[in-house]
Image (cartoon, rainbow, N blue to C red; front, side):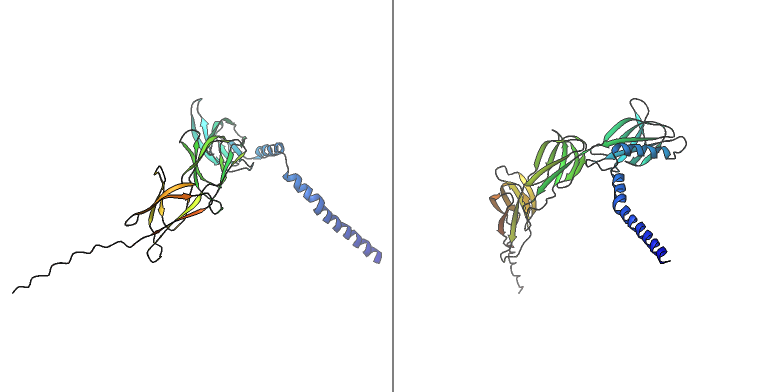
Length: 309
């Protein structure tokens, strides 16, 4: 009886050890194989899944797949236009990438809501079947990196323009990645004064990194009264030499400016100004003004009224 119990215990122990080995060795390999499927296998699985979908009578199905510059599938908005003839089409439906859309069988043009928008033509949808249109990557990406005078990330507004024009494609911010259709663009960065990067080439599936580094210094226009108390005043900053207005702001707060020489005018009463104030990259310049209290003109005394006798 004791031998029998011992035998059962040994069997249980062997089974338990086997389960541990399976979890540690075999299961991870299975998971790894599952996540590392080649692109051809993914497409094959998609077609298999498409064949199993139930489609409404008299309709076909359309699924548009799109990936970004990092090869990640994204739900980019799409519009489907049914072709009427070689020259025209009509709006049929809208959806997002990766989602199945039921439409009347026919030939369709697909407008992808990329930046700028892109159109793919002559996509055939058949009655009772799903068409999987794998567009792959339709964009590249741009990131403009910049830091301010304190060496921290600076989020300046920027405009992306069609090359050699002033026609805007989109507006964005520095230090943020922007997906955009391949092409050649000009970039305007909204520093004071503005900076430009010309003929920036974007390619499909690639990221363009423009590292500006530190492109500004800091100017503090400090305004106080005669007792040393801060007074908020309107300040106008112009470029020395050209007198071009660079910024109109308020005093007692730092403003980022490009390297250069500037004239400062404080719109106090009376006005005060300083000329040829230097601003260097990565440094803070300070211009101080003492604002006197405005002289209040005194009204002339009224003549004393005559007393009637």
